[in-house]
Length: 456
Figure 1 (cartoon, rainbow, N blue to C red):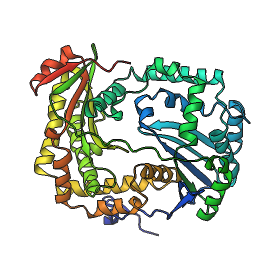
Figure 2: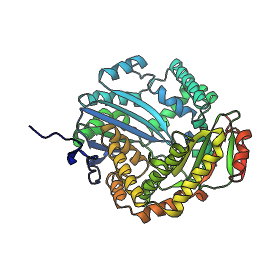
Figure 3: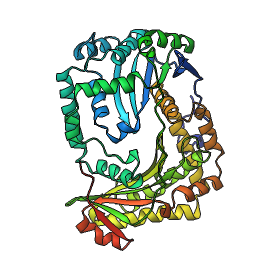
Figure 4: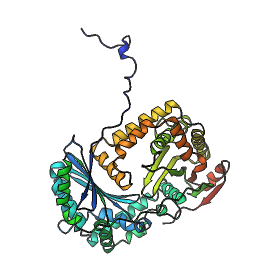
């Protein structure tokens, strides 16, 4: 009879050992040019019989500073074409086992979708129709504009959205990134003629990036893309002008954005961060993880576990074409606003001043490698990662260089990144809350200014 594992059997005691850390295996990415001027990235990733498509269009400055039209454009893209109305387009897509979506993410418009690999050619033909012969019928555009306005109205009532916009305004004053989301009134005014003009200038004439990942051969995929998207690719493509770099943050007083009668305060600290292609980005990732980027981070342990001030504090880096920035945030009850800010500043300052422990560094390394491995393990995740790297100028070499950088980063590297990017003296501090209840508290922490929120 085989021996069963038990408490007396040493083989059953304790968790299994953790294997050695290693960079994830990523498929080879073929870099192509479609019709000579549209960059395309293709990777074979089997496992499931699907294909993932991503098309990214960099937004020009005028669409960043006046975002109403591009906001309505995204849902209106599916309002129909010369060959299909909205319902027929959706039915044709569903019949292929596919889906499509469009949205604006910071400074790009993305079209994304997936389909059964065997139906890739007709799927791409539908995408080509959407890009070359859109209908934008008046009644559909009006409905999409009205829905977009209603969604904006709901979003603008959410304190997290207010905090995000107000922090960007504080960090990037005078830059397109400081522009708030489109106001409901502006969205309702968007006409079908405005969308047709924007479609011609952005989706037809500007240079996009095309990404295709799935159960397919890269050489065959290029031919399929060129054949199926030919009418769209034949249009002359021009690059979008580069955006001005982000201004350096200007730390100053604690800024309170008035939200009268709020029962909670939204704390946000922001500052500069390295780009994906910067040599110290892997080390900065690890410092960010130790500060507030994982469940065992210092800020989570303090604000959530020890003090119970908030459920989900965080530290994260946002990347854009104009630059990158770091955000630390926590949403707390009004009465503990100052206390939570003091603890946040303490953890960031202590990390910047004394550095990380060896145990923290190895835990963060496991976390960052695991997160990246998970991110590129699926067709969808790999496709989204590839298109982000392309639009941010990092290049596909990042897929191998980033995990190697995480493995190679030393304690000195991470300590240096913490000093450069997490020291409280380098960060701006913003609080969205009730000034009557938080100004007095916060004045014990530092100088305070109060202002009204952005007008919409």
